[in-house]
Length: 203
Image 1 (cartoon, rainbow, N blue to C red):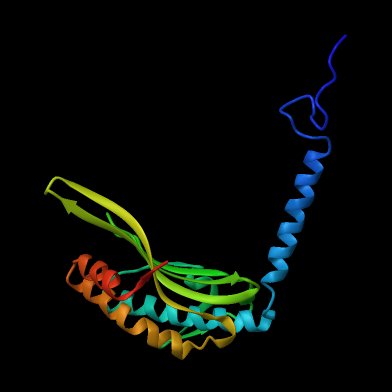
Image 2 (image 1 turned 45 degrees about the horizontal axis):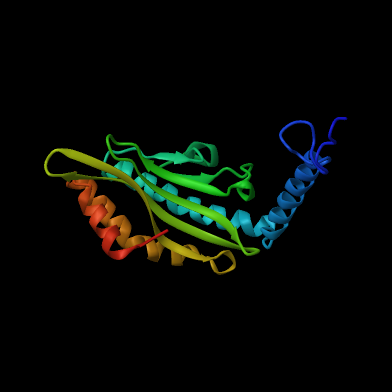
């Protein structure tokens, strides 16, 4: 006489009956809860915050291009949301969907170390925060033989989105941006690395 299969187990891999349906339901609930937890801002508020950050990032992009001759890689692509009117005048494209933007970045893709200024709107505990930081690829030489490359995040600005102001972000960016430009002018990335190690919090 054959033994019955253990209760609550399927024929393959021990998945209980209805396990797949339960997994799918839990995944759906998790997505819905995570989505609802992050909706403490209206589209209008999100759009204004995104415009404020992108305005600052675009002006940094201009400074690197004009003053240093270095074109940073921008996401979203700068000419998707900005129009050039001539005479050094720029304006936002009114049809651009600013409320959908959750992340934005300026990347220096220079070999062998990439440095990225990254901004994001992120939800934590049902509240939306604006976070801006530097993501650095750092290399250190040991015993004059090998170079170890590490990717590190440094926090420059982290505030509740409802309290965000472009003026506050500009103030927070002033010194890190000065050091980043200095490291570019002197072609010495350790200037930026050392500043971030000493002055900024990792995160």
